Length: 202
Image 1 (cartoon, one colour):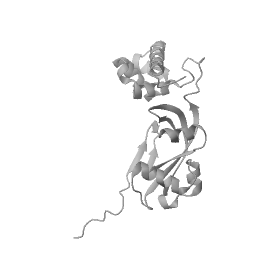
Image 2: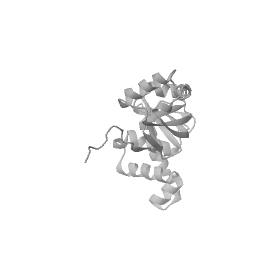
Image 3: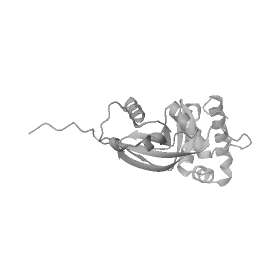
Image 4: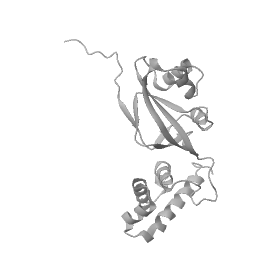
């Protein structure tokens, strides 16, 4: 019996949740409109239509996933490179190898097209939550400051991310719509902590 052929990289399906990490310089290009896509090695499936973009160790923007395409490395074009913020295909391939190590022509890559819908450095001071959706505050709090929150506050944030609604969270937790103020109070405290720690810069 012959040896197994290990010449091909095993293709493993990966998933993206609510958070998408992008290296700082590439995230800057995305925010400035120079970069429209992020290209990942392998077959990548986003679970949601919207994600929070992170770079430099903090959240930078909220973005909508416009499209997802899978190609082989050898099928990448100059248009793919330019939409990803590079001048040539060679520059794009160098960046991919810098991130993933040696890549092969037949390796699959996933091209995710993004549209920034809210920058987190351009918020609304007059809005109770600076223009952020309550559920986004909850997600950021659970990711960056869970140890700063009390056990009950963490539970509130978790349920809010599941229900996507202050009203439904109040009913699930307390069986009473009038207890919405408790959720709002925790949201405002979480937002204040995110600002104090420099995670959000309004």
